Amino acid sequence: MKAAEIRKRFLEYFQRNGHTIVDSAPLIPKDDPTLMFTNAGMVQFKKLFLGQEKRDYIRATTSQKCLRVGGKHNDLENVGRTARHHTFFEMLGNFSFGDYFKEDAIKFCWEFLTEELKLDKDRLYITIYKDDDEAGELWQKVAGVPAERIYRLGEKDNFWSMGDTGPCGPCSEVHYDQGEEVGCGPDCGIGKCDCDRYLEIWNLVFMQYDQAEDGTRTDLPRPSIDTGMGLERIAAVCQGVASNYETDLFQSIIQYTAEMAGVKYRENEEIDTALQVIADHSRAIAFLIPDQVLPSNEGRGYILRRLIRRAYRFGKLMGLEGSFLWKTANKVVEDMGDHYAELKETRDFMIEVVKGEEEGFAKTLDKGLEMLEEELAELTKAGAKVVPGETTFKLYDTYGFPIDIVRDIAEKQGIDVDEPAFDALMKEQKERSKAAWKGSGEKDVASLFQTLLEQDVTSEFSGYEGMIDQSTIT
Ligand code: ATP
Ligand code: MG
Ligand code: MG
Ligand code: MG
Image 1 (cartoon, rainbow, N blue to C red):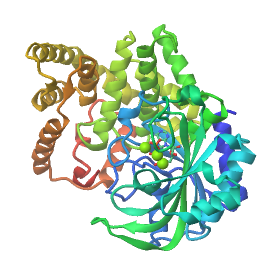
Image 2 (image 1 turned 60 degrees about the vertical axis):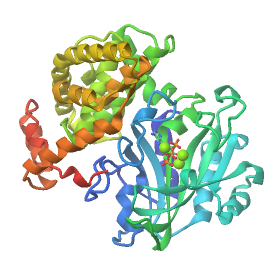
Image 3 (image 1 turned 120 degrees about the vertical axis):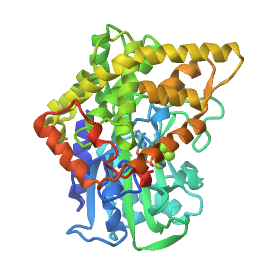
Image 4 (image 1 turned 135 degrees about the horizontal axis):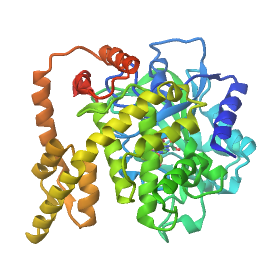
């Protein structure tokens, strides 16, 4: 079953069960300065959970665009390392705003997985929050899951919050056993290791509390439900493959890139990592730009810049010549533009932005690499094991060289990067530029973006920088 079909079936299943299908919100959360990017389906419904807003529905279902780079949920480092983490992904979700609670959430989830998708029950495992006896009983009663397949875990795994503040609650998750061959050995198990064998597919959050900045939790007006299932993961399960990258969602871009580079997927580990990183980042890039993020030197724009530059370098390692990312990002538009119309609407603009950024970076990449290699050679000669913050900062400041690239290269030579020192220097610089900036609010970014879009002006983005107050973004 293709991923698009799973997405459709999910939304229709919940629609049949009284949920309103709501469009994905943009990747930039509206009116929420506590969050850099939308990182879960519940973000657009935060005020409904808090009882601060009412709409004409109390049940909703979505396929939400998510980005987990920076902030509480940061998966950038996991990309390429695991077969299940991406920067950009789609989260399928069903929501109850003070309507049904645990019992129906469990019932819907189980019915969708075992009857709609016909997953093998013997491969499914459940985790619950350690004190949540009620959830443990309901899984047995409503879904018939035997007690020995229900695991109790602590806060880290089974208490969900979007960030440091906001609606949160204990959760219960469904895991799919991908088989011993995927496992990491004798210590493999749910809550014990971090390998891909017991794949976490679906998280049911029993929204009960609102967490304040000082960590105290007060009850929400009414207990609610927020669930999230990664489309890429459930697609891997339905398509019988152990890696998200083997699903149709990624194979199309991977095969396209491999062909362009004259390489084959699954023949060489380094090439596979490069192909996966490019596919992952191309999706993030193709979705970020239509949602009004443009490359810049800080905040959200800097994340986009890092993704473009990182993917670009992986492409160079693989032998790709000239600019190519705009092509892989365009492939994303072709593959996903039917469901996400904004991709098609801004396609030409997106291509120009990416191409411009690639061309700009190409000029400085070689110089930066040369300087880094020299520094690493000196560090090795001196027996040092850490790249100092000043070096990483200089590379960033002079050559626009993102820290991820320094890390990728240094780690290969057994040298660590002093990230706290780099962060401190970045912070100093940010404060300097903030002091110099006396600008207006976020609204201006939207109008500037619109102007750029209309005029097709893509070469000069400096006006964008500093337009968002970055100080509150996590
Ligand atoms: P993991 O433990 O695997 O990192 P998580 O517990 O951080 O996942 P949740 O916050 O519970 O994830 O998000 C709900 C669902 O979204 C997950 O069960 C998973 O299916 C999906 N998901 C989470 N992070 C990612 C990611 N980086 N890439 C793809 N899918 C993801
Ligand atoms: Mg995670
Ligand atoms: Mg988890
Ligand atoms: Mg989870």
